[in-house]
Image 1 (tube, rainbow over the protein chains, first blue to last red):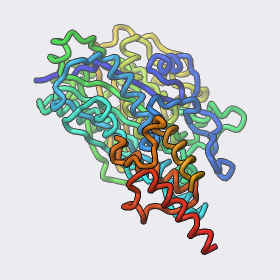
Image 2: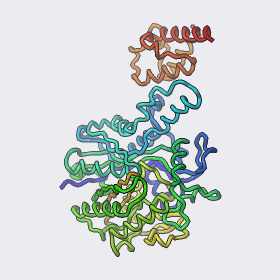
Image 3: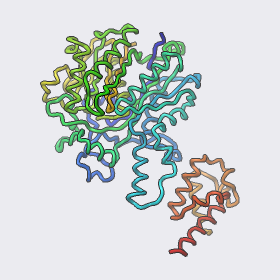
Length: 409
Length: 82
C-alpha cells in the first residue's frame, strides 16, 4: 500500500497570499470579503465578493498575455508549494499536474466578448484560446517545473480541486506517478459571471453596513454564498520517495471519498454527502485512521439555507453521536467561496489547523440556526488536543461530493 | 513610412528588450528568436496601435522593414477608402 505525503503547500486567497498569512487571517477572523471592484459593478445587485485586490503576478511581463488571472493565481500557489517541498532532483516523467477549476479563463473570454459585442471592435486578443482554456493553469505549471507526466484538469464545480487532489493521490497510490502538483484555481469575478450567479439567486445580497460580514455559514441570518477567487496548490509525493530524499513531511493524505447525488443539478443531498464522507472514512481506515481520530472538519459551509442544513445532517449521519464532539468550521465566512480553488485551499486550512493544533473559527456566527446544531467553533479559534486527523468537505453543483482526510505526521 | 518604422523599432526594443542592432529593417523576424505566441501577440499590438489589420498579410511580414511597409500601406489604403 503506497502512501501519499504532502511536502509543500501554497495559497493565494482573498485573506492573504502565502499560507502563513492565509492561516493567520483565518485564526484572527480577518475577512477578505469587500465591495467588489470590477467594470460595470454598479449594474450588479450583489456587490460583495472575496476579491483579491493586491495581487501582483510574479511572471515575466511578456508572458502575461498568455496567462489569464486564474493561471496567474495557480502559478503563484504552485511556486510556494514547490519551493517548500524543496525538490531538486526528480523523475520528470513520473511527475504530473492535477488541477481543478470550475470555469477557467472567464476574464479572457469576457474581455473578448466585450470587444466583439459591446465595443464593436472586430477582433479579440490573439492568445484568447490558450489563455482561456481550462487546462491553461495546469499546463503552465507543467511548463514551469518541467513535469512531463500526466497534466490533467478537473472541472467539477465547487469540488474541482478536492477531486484533483484525490485523483492525484490515487495515481500515486497505484504507482502511476511519484510526484504531483495538485490543487485548483479560480478567477471568475467578472461582470458576466457575477450576473449569472446573481440570476441563480444563490448569492448573499451583501451586508450594506458591514460588507466583510456578508457570508455567515451556519448562522440563523445566513443569506447565501459570497463568490471568491484564488488558488491552492499542494505537492503530493509518494511517502517513500519523500522520506528517501529527507523531505519535511507536512501531512499524509489518508482518505478520499467521492460520490454523486444523481438527484438534482444544484440542490444538496444528504445521502450523497454521507456516502462521500463514509467512503473517505473507509479509505482512511486502510491507513489506520478511525472516525474518532477526526479532530476537526473544515466544512463545505457555503452559507446557503439548504446547504448548511444538509451538511449538518450528513455529518451527523456519518459520525453518529460522535458528531457533536467534533469541531466543524467554515472558513468561507472569511475567504468566500473560491469555487475551483475552494477544496484545495480549505484542505490546506484543515492541515494547518491540525499541525498548529488550532481550529479556525466560523466567523459571523452570532445567531445560531437551531437546525444547524453541531459545534461550529463560533467566532473564536479552538485549541485541538493532539489532533491525529482532519477532514475537508466539498459538495458541488452537479451533485459531486468529495471528501479528503489528512493525517498528522 | 519612416515614422512607422521608427515607432515599430521602438516597440520591439521595449517589448523584447532588443538592441538597436537587432531591430535593423533588413533583419528577419524568424532570426530574432521570438516565441511564436509572442509574435502573434505583437502583431495584435501593432494592429491596435496603428488601427490596421495585418492578419491577412501575415505571409508578407518577413523582415522588420516589411512590417513597417505593410503597416504604412494598410494605413494609406484605409485613408483612401475613408
